[in-house]
Image (cartoon, rainbow, N blue to C red; front, side, top):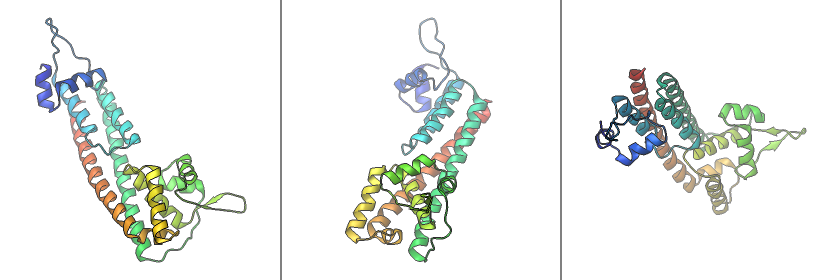
Length: 240
């Protein structure tokens, strides 16, 4: 296949085909004596994989890295490794979907039920449960997204309400909200409604409008991304 032909089949611009070759998203392309590139069916499958991997624009940095790994391994014709990477990526997307669901449930629970601040979690336990790095949580605290109490030994102590707020922040970050945007949202709600506790904050009309709009959009995009990865897995299974 020539460049124009494979571009038409992959439904991308011919320049994108050449760019993907330059970025090593596809295998090196041999040339004929006349200098024209000659693409194979494997190249076409590799283009399909690259298109599917980067189809969702919502993908945040850590997800984009995982998608890029799949594509680069495919471009090296390491299809088994690419398949393993794709399956791990799918598992990660499922995990993100679960955390989003838990965040919605936490908001609903806080709005409709009385909560207790027991039990108390350590910094390490909190990070492990939310699958966040300790530095990430400390960074959110430094930037004023939340405040946590400390023990007599000056160790952070996380109550149930702290965990729920962190889960909400995690979901907003997954939906591409910047730290500054989340802080601005919280501060704006607190200044207008004169609230500081998590339950009152979540009860505000502005937060509910923002949060449920974001999670609806995130749910749609995660489902699309999971479907795209399943298609990638199907392609890679045939290429092994």
